Image (cartoon, rainbow, N blue to C red; front, side, top):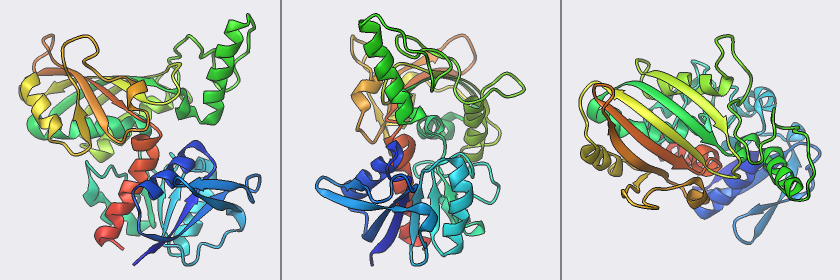
Amino acid sequence: MGYRVAVVGATGNVGREMLQILAERNFPADEVVALASSRSAGKQASFGDNGTLKVHDLAKFDFKGIDIVLSSPGAKVSAEHSPRAAKAGAVVIDNTSYWRMDPDVPLVVPEVNPQAIAGYKGRGIIANPNCSTIQMVVALKPIHEAATIKRVVVSTYQSTSGAGKDGMDELLNQTKSFFVNQTLEPKKFTKSIAFNVIPHIDVFMDDGSTKEEWKMVVETKKILDPKIKVHATCVRVPTFVGHAEAVNLELERPLDEVEARRVLAAQPGVLVVDRRENGGYVTPQEVTGQDGVFVSRVRVDPTIDNGLSLWVVSDNLRKGAALNAVQIAEELIKGYI
């Protein structure tokens, strides 16, 4: 049996990646519909290596008969149209931040908590976590099972694609202007991103953290374990694709680097590249277009009892967004719809 699938936000960075991954993984779809705003209606969206789809106006689209919706249009748009699609009978897999902390909406990373998918019937919506949270919890899952994580301190190095096409364009244009001795004022970011790092992603909260940092805290608790303490510092860096994270863990039980590498390597979706030599680790540039969560620099932290440190890298547009959504859809059709 084939499914009817709609991709909302099909002309954005993540939407384009969703279409590509659906084709790459031969998702059993009899029909795939590309949806976007009226500005993009009538344009063509790439589907796989050779195919194209006509983009339809989301506001005018009737979701009746659609089985699965992969949605990444922005939170405000999702708030309006994801319930509309669910009411028409579709299961919505939503990549925006709007539904993630709704108690009636499961927040799912298939390698970590696939059983949570069963909760979709409350609203007909399944939430895709934040990109930084996804790659971190995939790496944390086997360590938590082996030694129980008490506390996580994470610093992120997040690429400009996490802020959409405008973020990538701003990095490119500011870099070009530097070499012709011009200055372009920032528009997408709060300060110049070219040759710089910015410790500010999303809005500030009352406690001084940013909303991106808050997301990593609450989403990790919802997905993995509410008892885990999480402290995050999220930083935008001048790269185009791929997020990296320096993760420091305090465990309940000792876990040395040899055993940590072993349990990480056995975890679905994780690839361990950890040689203590020049280049024996993974960087964001190398993981662009890759599906896995890569772990390097595994080592004991001797400054605390049962301490462990990791370097975690992943393609934020794939595993951090589009691929995770498609993997949820793959799990969904195995036994939930």
